[in-house]
Image 1 (cartoon, helix red, strand yellow):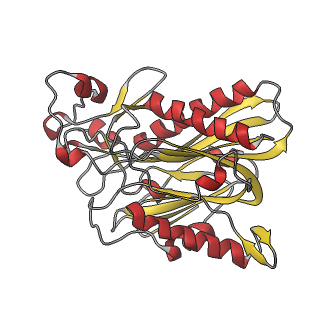
Image 2: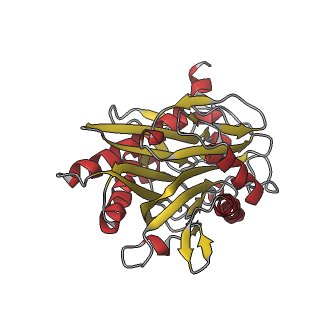
Length: 335
């Protein structure tokens, strides 16, 4: 489910195939921003891997293997740059009201890690998600199909920005799941706002890249950036970052969950090329609900994590619709 001011929603099943997780969006198409929450109220082992030189995050240090707390109750993905981190306060309020969180003395403290992407200026720089929007996303959270494309944290996302915003393509949010058999699943959700292009890992096809002369034909971002003739555009440097969550229903240790978050970046790099650049703050969270016993072959979970992330990225971009003068790839195909 999603809260949206206007616009059409696309529905897909992915990360919510991990039982115990619920996903909700808040979408503001007029302001071209939004946020997405993944609720795991029962308490889930969490991990994180932050890459790129421009991250915007909350509660990530707590997730590292050496830290004391392992329990996570929600993860927030938000637009709005650093301002969007305020939306996590609404998620904390939602959980506290329901008695969900880490019990510390007489208090209940919900653990809500968060990450943001830069979508300011696509339509306006004055509208960004805050506590009320984070709370609304929680109210909208469901365990069924998830809206994809230009919704939630993907509302104002754009990709293929090496030539600047006038040549970019609309990004979005997508979700996917890999079924490993025996009830074991690994799912992902990702909001894609990369400076680089997006590629289908299965075919090598360029899904989204800088548009030649602002038209329907797209360039290969990786080839462009590594060409001796390429001249970087200053306008392409800052407004980026891909963020997401990969989750499994297996019982994993905190060390293993952090390894799964690292594997998620492999999936990111398979679908976004180039990734982890100076203007990116690429951040991937990982969750393990512990419904099933620890898998005999943990490497299968890592491989499925990478695969589900790359699929989610491609789905999010293919399902995105135009906004702020930036067209979606589906609209380009129809020209």
